[in-house]
Length: 126
Image (cartoon, rainbow, N blue to C red):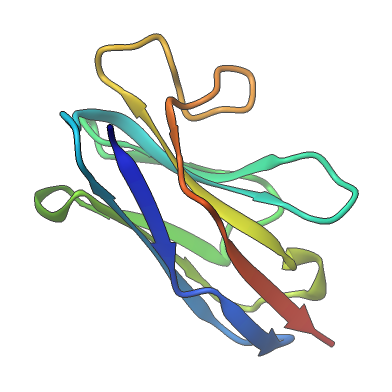
């Protein structure tokens, strides 16, 4: 079974930076895409950024464009999320996710991924 493990969360002040990482292990891991989602208390889970492994393209939520960068290291089955100019509204639990090449899953809220990590907390104080 594929397992995703996130790291790098923490607490920062407004304007600070954090780098999240997600490593995949186990099973037969052939990702179509990898993504970061987040969920704040009382709010629905939302997609933050995703990367399509084969073509190397990236997509971002409007709220994080220009501040967050997603990148992947295919050889290590790892994806990172570099977050800069953090705002209090970025406070949430951040989840790594991935969809398999061999499924109908995607990395969007409308077509959910196949695999999810446990999440890592990001807290931005004003």
